[in-house]
Image 1 (cartoon, rainbow, N blue to C red):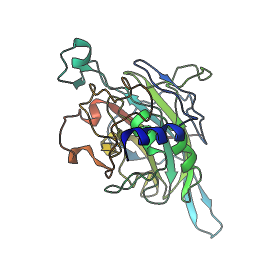
Image 2 (cartoon, helix red, strand yellow):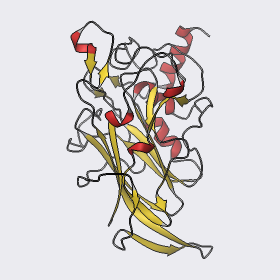
Image 3 (cartoon, rainbow, N blue to C red):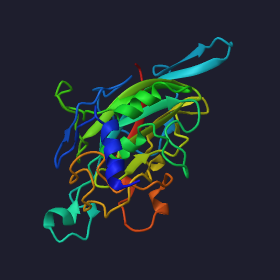
Length: 292
């Protein structure tokens, strides 16, 4: 299948998602599905996530089988902590030699099953992950997750905290800004989410395929979970040097115009060719239970 035919097919599939990243913003109209971006109070947490025992943030319920389950309301904050020097490239152009790392709108799922979004060492499932990994568009994945068994809540986060939510377009996450969203979960639930490493062809940040366990010994976790987040290669587009490639969102002519490959999803550490900043130099993720 030629690149032209493949690009044509992808363009048709994304006809309703005609927007893409320009150099400074996302010109998109993305429908938030389920629980979307919300403005909640700033969350200040330090260190590794820990269990939090606090009756004000959780309660016990009994399900139809008579089994007691602990429930809690959570806020998640994804903050861009990159700087103008985080990504170093081989470019001669001063503007490209050192760069920050924007992040894209993304999708999340609260689930009690395994691997709701992807499976390591297997190809992308044609569920919408490719659109996030290549173009930062979460619409299709958010819709797909809402229909999956084992997923209790899902949605898209599209608007940085403090930005007018009524603005016509969502926006990428630039240094110093953050996405926040809320959900309810019960003991046994896990959290998965994806957001694009924008100066790339098809890379995304995510917990591993299992997601993050939201309870420890029956208590809701509370704190920094950044050490659970990794950079993944979706295996759908040939990698170019990060921050430089002509088929990356900040420089490409539109979504779906790329150098197609069909490989499996793997951690970027298993892919040869380029150097990427540590996840902790790009984002900080905190999970906090609270009185909903």
